[in-house]
Image (cartoon, rainbow, N blue to C red; front, side, top):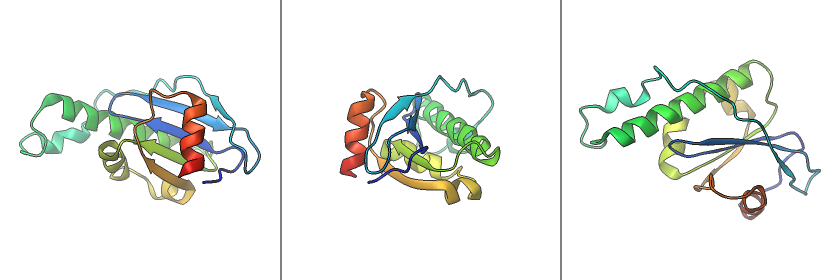
Length: 134
């Protein structure tokens, strides 16, 4: 995959979101870590609709769903505020599915792509390699 210069790369799992800015010129990828977004995960309640579901029996899954909803909300706000021109989302498959439920139409229009892998614990170089391979 080739990323445009300036693309925001969000690497997310059920409890962590790391943000990067691509400052490389196509076809090079040069990811620069951005400061912690500090978004609020309180009172999001995405997992609330699953509380009685056999598909989500434990509290940790509910917490992960809430985190994914909060991350999507943060990304939606950034896009709507005009701070994001292009966005690449990298998340484990389950989190990616939950994120998609919360994407705003404006975010969908800015989405350069999605990669269904858990890369939150990887270095920027390893993340860039996964993007190139996608």
